[in-house]
Every structure is written in C-alpha cells, then in structure tokens.
Image (cartoon, rainbow, N blue to C red; front, top):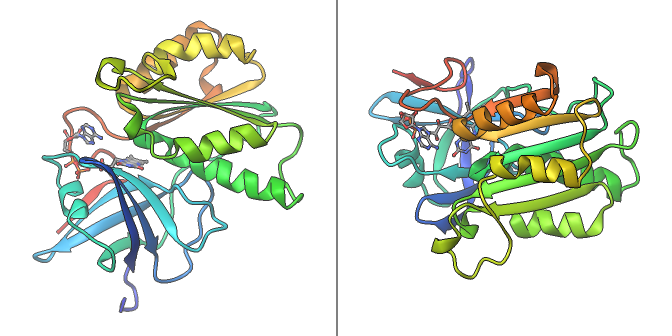
Length: 268
Ligand SMILES: Cc1cc2nc3c(=O)[nH]c(=O)nc-3n(C[C@H](O)[C@H](O)[C@H](O)COP(=O)(O)OP(=O)(O)OC[C@H]3O[C@@H](n4cnc5c(N)ncnc54)[C@H](O)[C@@H]3O)c2cc1C
C-alpha cells in the first residue's frame, strides 16, 4: 500500500506479451485512477535493495482505457530495462502518480495535417493518439476541431519490431483520416516482408510528397531513436518546416545514462 506523501502508485502487471527477445508489451493496473493526455509519458520504476530506479515511458493506451499500456525495449546494459524485463504478470512496479510531457496532439497552431514519424517503440504515443481519436470518431463525439488528418510512418529493422502494425493497419483501412506505412530497414534479415523498405527518415520526402503534406499545414512529430529524430528534423527543415511545426520526443541520448533529469532518474 502506498503511504501518504508517496509520489508513486504501486502498479501491477496485468498482461505481458513478448514480441521478440528484446521487445515486449506490458499492460498495468496503475492501482488508482491515473490521469493523462494521449502522447504523455509515465515514469516507471523498480525498487531493489532500497534503491529506486526510474525511467520515462510513453503511454500506448488511450486515456479512455483503465489499464496503462507500454511498449518496451531491453537495453542489455541499462539500469532499469533488465529489471523490468524480469517482471511477469502479477508483479508490482512503481509508477509516478503524475503523467508528464508535451508531446500531445497539436490543436493550437491551426495546422490540420499531422505527420507522425517513429522508430520501433517510438510509435507508442501515436497509438495513444489514434486509439483516442478512433474512439471519439466511432462514438460520433469527436472533440477535434476542423478536418484533421494523421499520417504515420513507422520504421524498424525487421517487421517483428512493429508491435502495433496490425492494429494501425486496421484503423487505416477503416477511417478516412488516418494513413499508415511501416518500413523495414534490414529486409535481407526479413525475407517474408513484402512492404516498404528503407529507413524511415529516408522515406520522409517520398511520403510527404505522396500525401501532399506541406509545411504550412502540417505538424511533424518525431519520436524514438535520436539519430532518426536528428536526420528527420534536417530533412523536414530543408523541405521548409519551421522549428515550431516539428515536435520531438527523443528516447535517449547516445552514451548517456539517465537521459532527462525529470524524465529519467535513479533515486537512492
Ligand atoms: C519521454 C521519453 C519516453 C520514452 N518512452 C519509451 C518507451 O515507450 N519505450 C522504451 O523502451 N523506452 C522509452 N524511453 C527510454 C527509457 O526512458 C529508457 O531510457 C530506456 O528504457 C533505457 O533505460 P535503461 O535504464 O535500461 O538504460 P540506461 O541505463 O538509462 O542507459 C544505458 C545506455 O544505453 C543507452 N540507451 C538507452 N536507451 C537505448 C535504446 N533504446 N537503444 C540503444 N541505446 C539506448 C543510453 O544512452 C546509455 O548509454 C523513453 C524516454 C523518454 C525520455
């Protein structure tokens, strides 16, 4: 039981699904109502030998769902992910009571096209956006002003890294406001893959042209691997996107432990 003043909920794992030796999905019961906006992250942690180690994880689920869902990648020599990786259904972990982050849907700028670009687990906030919008659309109760459209490009080395491909393809087949393309950068390691190939940043120009996305009317959201974010930012800048029209969520800085002071901390 959490004691008064504790910053954490004592969450419990409801479901675990392994996608590959280093990628897995978790669904958690946060232990108490957890408020967040689609696109925000939760701070998850494990306490071991009196030390709490915490990191930021984008929330995959929609605020409409009771369970909190995450898409995780094992960093073999990392501080937290090997501990998270050992957890199974029914196990407890820490979840900070407050969700954070500003990587939410841009409804302020007046731009009505949204280009969502991700690598592997970086698709998490976009799944949360689309699940939420889909539910609103289905109930005929969409709070979204105007005629917004969403275009998602997801990159992975091989197709088993996508996690949410089938779900996103189903939405794209059903609704008029969402398009989705997954691309594999190592097709020689995935011979059955029949879809798009190449790195997601290398395909940006192609799809921006194909979907007729223009800098004046499109907000770009870049999420995941820092090299992809940097390359994609440069490509979009050269195509006319201004700083305020590109949102970024970098999952780590190469060679640096405990990336963001607020997001990622190891608390003794
Ligand atoms: C806002 C935000 C949201 C995030 N959302 C997710 C998410 O949804 N899913 C997810 O799996 N991670 C996510 N991350 C990354 C997560 O917070 C941790 O950084 C990651 O899980 C590694 O933690 P660790 O303690 O195991 O490794 P650390 O001990 O923190 O890092 C060890 C070393 O590995 C490097 N490193 C860290 N992550 C990676 C990686 N993925 N690939 C290669 N090298 C890496 C670090 O730079 C460092 O050099 C997010 C990060 C931020 C800031």
